[in-house]
Image (cartoon, rainbow, N blue to C red):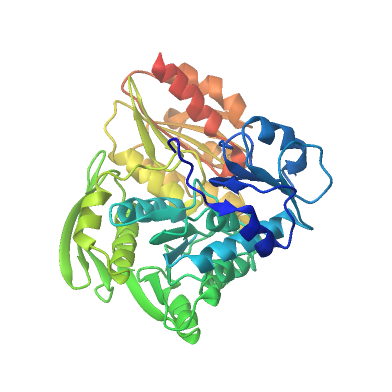
Length: 457
């Protein structure tokens, strides 16, 4: 940040926006809802929610050098305070004001799989072409989206927002907040089906992203996805222009050829009628397809597609989404989340990776409802097809898969991820390549952390 603080917000403007009254004047250079990551000069928003009570951390915020705080109750602190009725609503108002004062092109990304990696690719390629802003991590929910908006500097040129959901009605208010000019749906597959009657219903929930868009805005959809027609129909009813990406020859942004290597992927695509060749820093057809959507967004934004394709070669793979850690053995960190589609993609990458032994450390895929047992048992086929040597499983549903494994593939089973750690650690040998993947709620990240500790030596 240097000596001179870049001012994001100042108290006089914020008081008018949120309908509060600052106890004393202040200006901030950022916004935080978590004192663990708060930086000096941030406005601290004391949220109340399922995960805790923000007001408890006001002393921490002051000690770390917060500029001020949004509060909804009387609080003893040396910080300048903005007293509001509801701190989340105040953050939402600030986010909408940030949107309205900026001329940034706003791009929103949703989908059952590939949201975060696609959002990261968009941020990466646009940053080489103009001032770019977007969600950190997976801040894609009812507080993550307004926080990302409120943090957006006024001079932003490209703004990228990831939008997530697990139930109907969650995307709609976020779309109205963002008002995307370009919306991108990566893919709609069987995920969160415990909360939906069908994949079509999941598609309709994803289509809520269209509802905050002005007529004539652009939508990018996966032409190869079975839900394409339904999504395109809903988009057109909303008065939006539909563009598509995929292998299908009707695709506007089309994959002409893809070659997966051990650690990279080579792509030849047609974007806006022009052929483009480029390299991706991770293997997997899903990466190639999502990169088409990214370059399609660049094309629709009027930015430089060839430069963006060149930028893709150096994109950083997000933590927990296929990041590769090389050492005496190789770890493929897929620990962030899982559904049947992304699990199969991860096993395909493991199958193509170079290693003495290919080891899958996999945990339960959550929110699959009545089809849970079946979807876990069905993973036997991709494990065999990709010539996985050993399988370690945790979670009640993975027990069904473990029972079906041939004896020579059974590495070990434990009810929880923490109980699985010693079994995995005991087995690892130099030259192994190990994929770790499960739903977020199964909590397999500690397995990755334990492997990284051993790898460091």
